[in-house]
Length: 493
Picture 1 (cartoon, rainbow, N blue to C red):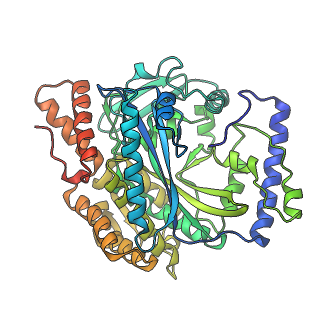
Picture 2: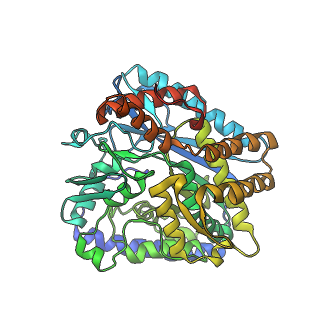
C-alpha cells in the first residue's frame, strides 16, 4: 500500500485484467515457495509507528505535508489522515544489544521530528486514537492527505459499499454515527511489528501471533475514546473494522468476509492467506504494472509481484502476510498490526519485546498450543481483550478461562523471557523491557486505563467531557515526553 498509484478511477476492463494478473502472480508465488531461495534471516525485527499531529491546543493539526517537508527524512511518510504521519524504523537483528539500538534509534528520530514539527506549529503524539478528534474535524476534504492513492482508496471502498459507513460501537458508552467518507479510519494509529522468517516457518509464526493477539492487546490497549465517547479499551479495533467495511448489511447477513479480518482458521503456509485474499476480496485499487512475473521467474530474476502485493495491502488482517524484495532477494514476514501507538518509546519497546519473545517460543513448541485451541476461540479472546483490556477473561489451552492479567503474569511474560533468551537478547535488556510489562500488569494500568482514570478524575473536578479530554491529553503529552512508562504516570490533580 505504500507505493503510489497513477489513477483514481478504473474501468471494468482494468478490473478484469487486474484479477487475471493477481491470479498469475499468486501462481508464480506458489512456484517460488517450492523452488526459490528466500532471505530467511531470523529475528530481524522492523517497526513502524503511526503518529498524530496536534496544534498548541492539542487539536488535530491537518498539515502533515508541511511537517514532513520540515522533517525532511524519508523514514517519515504520509498516512491517510492529513493529521497523521508514519515513521519506519530500519529492521535490525534482536540478538545482543539490537533491541537497545532499535529503542535508541526510535527515540532519537522521534525527538528530532518533534523539534522540527514545532517549527510548523505542530507536535507529535503517540496514541491509538486522538481523544480530541471530533466529528467536525472530519468534515469536507481537508482531513485526507493529498495523494491519488488515498483518494482512490476512499472512492473504491465507498463504491463497493454503496452507502455511508455506519459506526455503531457499544462499550462503556455507545457511539452511533454515520460517515460519508473513510475519514474515521484515519483516527486509528498503530505500531506495526515486522518479523522476517523463512517461508517454511511462516505458518507457525503466524499461528503463534494469532494465538497471542488477545493477550497482546490486553497488555497494550491505548484507545478508549472516540468522538468524545468512552467505548472499548482498544476502540481502534472495532472502529477500524466498521470504518472500512465494504459490506452493506445484506452482504454481512450473507456471511461475506470483512476486509478488516482476524481470519477464520489456522494455516499451513503463507500461500493459504494470499490465496484467501485473491479468492474472497475484490480489488480496490486495480493498478496494473508492466512486469511479466512468469518471464521474470523463468529468467532467474526475482519477480516483484506488484499486483499481488498491492491487493494484499488492501486486506487488513491484524497479522498480515508480507512478500517483499530487497536488493534483489525475496523474503516473507509477518506484519503484526495489533497494537495501538504509544504511550512512550519505552512502552512501545516493552510491547515489542513481549511479542517477539513470546512468539518465538510459541512457534517453536514441539506440540503447538494453537493445535489445542479452536480458531474461533482465539478470535473471541482477541475481541474480549479489545473490549476490556487487562480486565478481560481469556480461554487458554491447558488452563481454561483465566483473567488476562493472570495469564500474562503466570504464563506469557515468563514465555517472553525464555524467547528473548533463546534469541540471544542481552539479559539486562530483556529484564528491563519485560520488567516494564510485568509492572504494568501488576499495577493494572496500561495506556487505556490511565486515560480513563485521568478523564474521570478531571470530570469529578467539574470539567465537561471535551474539557477533560483536552486536559488529559495535555498531561498525556507530558508523560510521553518524560520517557517514563505509563503505569508510573500520576493522575491529574
